[in-house]
Image (cartoon, rainbow, N blue to C red; front, side, top):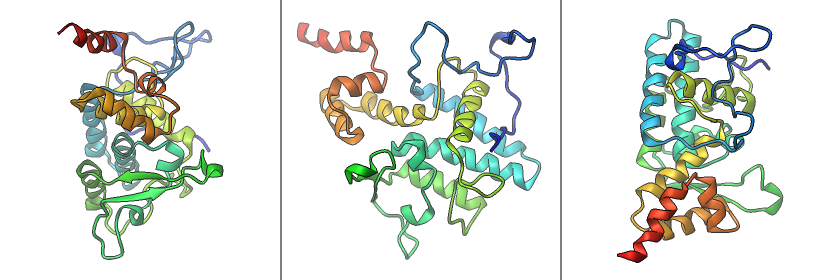
Length: 239
């Protein structure tokens, strides 16, 4: 399936546009750069503010029913992705019934068996926070009666490649220049929890269990804790 295009114009950073060897515009501005780490980055809270502005604008300027549905879907995809901590393969198959019970009331949490670790038989807990509820209510206000959120324009389940294009083009439209992908959403979830937590050690341990990592060091690298942050943390011994 051809990856779907977003409904807004991409603004180039500093007015400079990268050109491929064949003379065509290089659309991979938010891809990794040769010689640098290929690990995708989480978004900062300031990044998210810019991204949400882009997504809201795409909804506001949509001129056809199809474009409006795509813009609303994209906004929900990124907002949920940054607030539930799931891989895109699991996020894309979530339905309204996962979040709400038979009476239509929101659950406090629900459990999901991730596709990647299905052979282990392990489940993960998804906490349905206020931010999650608000993102879903925002979508359902436009499309009440929705059962499945993440469908392509052809009606099939949104593919990971299409979700990747959505994330990368949204980041670029927000003026961000870095290596971003669908995993950025899950990493952002962890990064926000870590940076908001008063006890960083406890936060890393909890995130390690949540992400099923082998050690806090793995989690620290995963969510993008910088060497400067680690140095500041260690310097607490000098107090």
